Image (cartoon, rainbow, N blue to C red):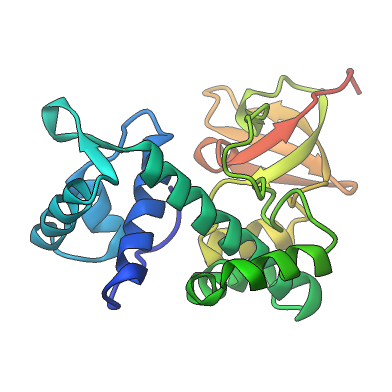
Length: 227
């Protein structure tokens, strides 16, 4: 998922929300959610994850699948979506109003998201002009359909617009931001190396070499015509 370990130290509803958000994120990947992946992402021991998962199942927020995998129930999904909405609105507040650098927005929003009441969340959305996406490009509505593709799939000499940064790790976001590879930027793949492991991309009149793994974390929309 790209984000560094959260190191969950709080208890109660905050911890539950962090788990629900993480399960939602991993559930959207091919690997799915697992105890090991949650432990690594949240920075806690596997035994702690097991205990929390038992609690979440008892309260009807998750259901276990075969082979040790698990998924959110409808109620768990709704709670995760609410948390993600608050998180992404908080990121907008931080970057648009408080001018917090993009690479710092994710971690700061993780602290703010739990403090927003439904009433304050609604006021914040209105004050921000009801934005459709967070500054990293993720839709405010976590249930929105995804119509993007990885930059790594863009053919040579085709123009596209960057839709979002999938990896919100501060170092990655800073690296991409310094090169103008941010949501809304127009980008063209100019060349692939012979093994296909490096892309040479052009943005704002400058060319940059990107590892294929990094290019996969950049999502694009509406590929254009040949350039």
